[in-house]
Image 1 (cartoon, rainbow, N blue to C red):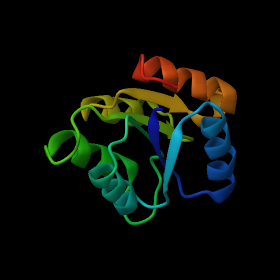
Image 2 (cartoon, rainbow, N blue to C red):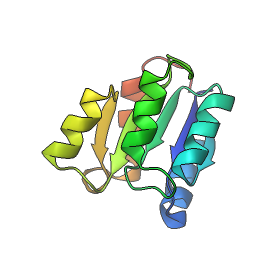
Image 3 (cartoon, rainbow, N blue to C red):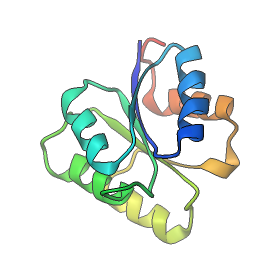
Image 4 (cartoon, one colour):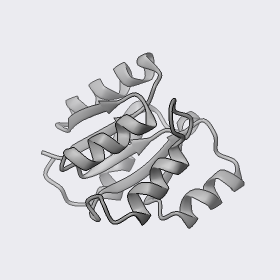
Length: 126
């Protein structure tokens, strides 16, 4: 079973996507702040993190930078930005810091998002 960290502070969004990923046989860990996302990344052996750019305590790009550049986290952890912010500047920054995917919230249904995440993480048992 694949394990996903859902780094999102909006409770309605968490509820929707947690259910969709659990239905797709993912184990879901929820992080509601940037610092919480880093704690989860350090402690959980997750396959992927779905990371919002706008989070309390620490923004998504700072979380991404820390995970990808510090060497303290599982190097196999895939990080996918999932945000309403999808300007070229945000995308460019995210890819410069090593993001594995960038998915605008408004362009995917919950089911489409699950399928896109599966494609990005590859052949992990779902």
